Length: 250
Image 1: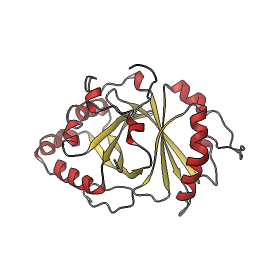
Image 2: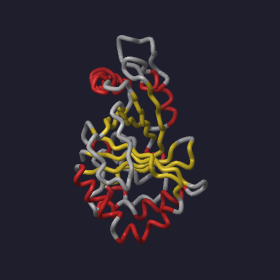
Image 3: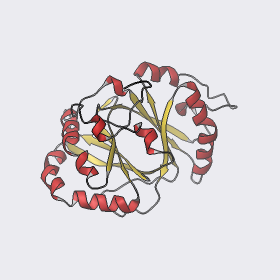
């Protein structure tokens, strides 16, 4: 997959559980039938009316075909009213280009592997996923990316962070304007996973912004690596493919 959407929805108060259940009941396999791949579904910790999900495409051409076929087809026409009735906002979307294998995000797991999980359920086995948004100065993303790949990522992995993948903006024209997207040329997005909140807090508390000879943690990294870093902490659903990948037998 060469194109990823990171979609962040604002839902009506009290509808998050119902929306996720409806989404997982109806919109996982139906989107794949159109060549679109739902990779992860999440609640945002501390923001109970938010729902985040990732959707992947083989190319921009496949994205146009998939979106046109799905949103112009009878399945969405049948189910859209119920879904839209629970949504307040759905335009917070980043269009991204993955810089690593999709299997690192999903652990090689498919929708069929998770289909036995109850729709809408959360599971402690899925751990937590942190999304770090690194925003650098205009024209600085290549340097930021080089520093991340050469210094920061190896240090994070060594310290125990499970780095799932990293992304930059997909710059090709959004040829499906019915769904607006953000294409921020100064943005690097990094996904990391943790078994639980305690492990996340412990690892994120290490490092020092004064340590200039080795990389430091995302939220503590200052210039010149990034001008600004923000983090969103996600709780995966039981059916989410993107999650903390535990070692050993499943």
